Length: 147
Image (cartoon, rainbow, N blue to C red; front, top):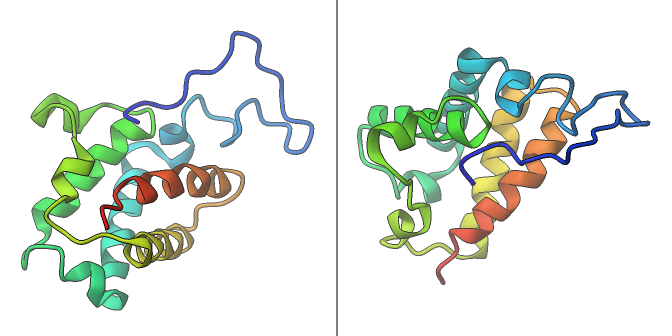
């Protein structure tokens, strides 16, 4: 998914939260997250968690992950409905193909989600955005499974 979901023509506020969108009041999840700054923070927190807590996922990354962090930020920008930075620079992300060299099963997908959940907590992402992102990240993590 490279863009925020397309919403129907008639949008009603949620009775539970009062927000027009399931992620909050902003027009896109990217804006709800805080635009570039919020997206950079989430990407940073995610890779910080991997480096500190997940030897399994860290083993799949290059020794120097500076470029990896930046590419993930760029991907998230477009995926969240912000500027499609990754696609503008490198084209379609082809995530599944890029992850094929690594053995990714249920444990790795679950670990990826755990790290993302900790990153969202560390980035202080509140509700309803946090639940919205959690629901969208889960299928993404599962899609990378190849074993």
